[in-house]
Length: 207
Image (cartoon, rainbow, N blue to C red; front, side):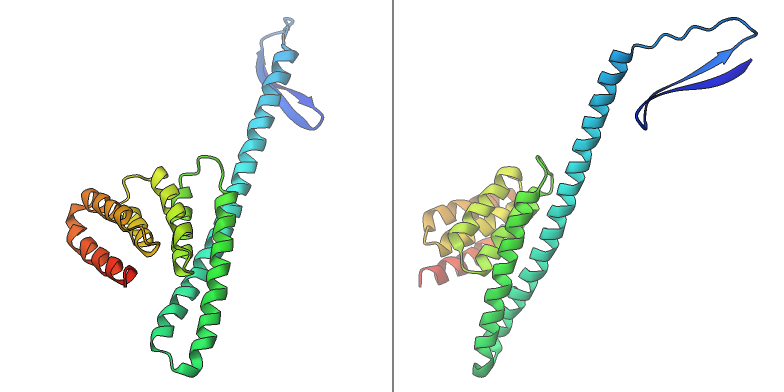
């Protein structure tokens, strides 16, 4: 017997394929439900389209995230350099810190917007955005970003610690204490150092 492959196409797109083995010379009848085939094909095309959109969204998110992270690294380094820089270099470093910090915020906001629905990496983007807000002195905005990250990843002790730091700097001492408490509960092994850092931040915030 011979094996034949029967292909059904809509335009250039193959929508169905059947293999048939023909024995001898008897007549073979092939029944195909075209309505069902076309419905299945439309669903497959739609699923493929959504997958492609999601992939492009993820790539867009990653591009903005990487740019934001790099700009944030530059801003943080400038902030560190400022502490030991000679007086004549301070203005240039402050300008660099402000510009890089603003770029970091813009890029990370764009990464948040570009994230596909239910993206498992979104909490990382939000935490990095919180870090960028904190670096640029926008403590209330940082609080909002860390709260969003916590809503997605409530078991992350570090997010609560960073939330506490920004609440303290925003003058919300009681709320900061509650956030530090939660961080210590989630990560008892590092609770002592977390409380020590919390004390420093609270002290500085209330000077």
